[in-house]
Image (cartoon, rainbow over all chains, first blue to last red):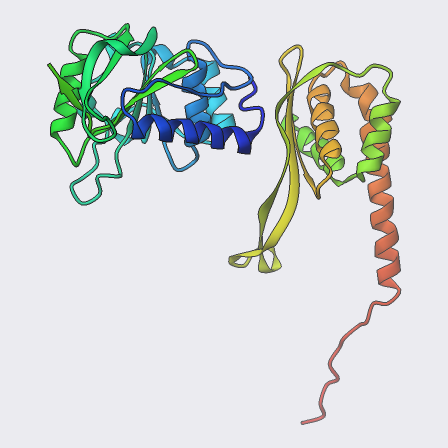
Length: 193
Length: 148
């Protein structure tokens, strides 16, 4: 078994702050403090996000690539969460292999009355860069236009983000992670071009 | 005794021993294993729940301060401890002892040097308290009223 955040309270607050920063500025690449140890094949940022946000009230879904015994044991021990096999009942989801990821509508998109009861999907990519190249984004939290380059995403990914945005106020919130970096694409973000 | 009952027993003995006693046992070890901290030691509170008479409806008795710690030895064995109070060294030592005791080869030695004596001390303290209390025991009984 592996160790989680070095200082459960302070590090959780730092991670939360980083997620807040990323979500309020979609497309911005933000560094997340890493845990002491990370079970492969997760990125440290993915592990930190879950250690800070997941608890016994938030079922966690792992894709086939993330379903290693070490990973399940790590989150059950540190978060006390349930690991579920159906994407539709999870509050948080980890996608290690975006090429095989289910359609975003298969996750819980909330209801019109309670759009907040939706899932947050963490998608691991190979690398994240902001500003110069990549997908153009607009919407709340972006002054004119943001550009986010995420390597390792499959062909139809940005199309599914556009469909997710069309469900507003329902929809999932997506967080991309690479190494110790994250970038958020909440449901409010529009994909341009 | 099943493996689980055996572990429950030593975890209970370690948790109920005084922090000072656990520390003495730790210092008395010839070889102290290397270990990594998995969690804690951290102080928190738990809600103690009980049943009236042991069989009644469950109710919350009150909160208790506990300190917990989890460690892993180099061979991967994981030890846990939840102890009453705010002693972080107590929880850490108890967790390492728990991990060590899971090795059947190490168990007899630790049983003789640590768990046995700690349990003996706990039982004798319990007996002393019982004796002290029994001297002041009051027998209540009701006189039969001469109604008939």
